[in-house]
Length: 124
Image 1: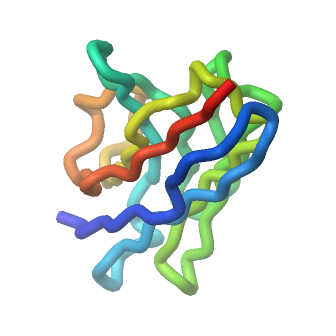
Image 2 (image 1 turned 180 degrees about the vertical axis):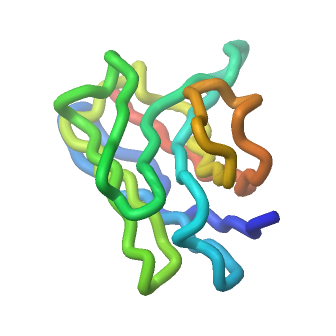
Image 3 (image 1 turned 30 degrees about the horizontal axis):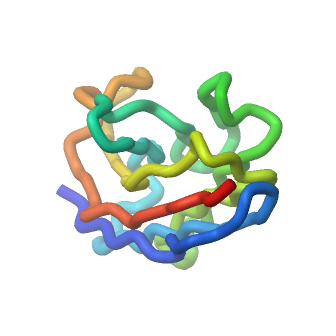
């Protein structure tokens, strides 16, 4: 499994931007699909975005399409989530996840490695 550590969360106002980072351990980072998920209080964990092993394809939840951008730097073993025009409904704990499985979907159950999460709070 891959060890993952997220950073970059915080408290911002609606319309602001944040960039989350997720650093991965190991020498096989370019063999895993990376994903971002989020979980708001009282809600199930939901898919936000994922990126293929070499960054060639990205996929987004409809709720964040056009506002969030996922990217990765395989030389730094890091995946990013650039979040623009944040809304109060984006408030959640954000998790990065990884898995070698191909093909892979957008369900949390598709990913075997998880970070500890980072809190993002957007005030109105």
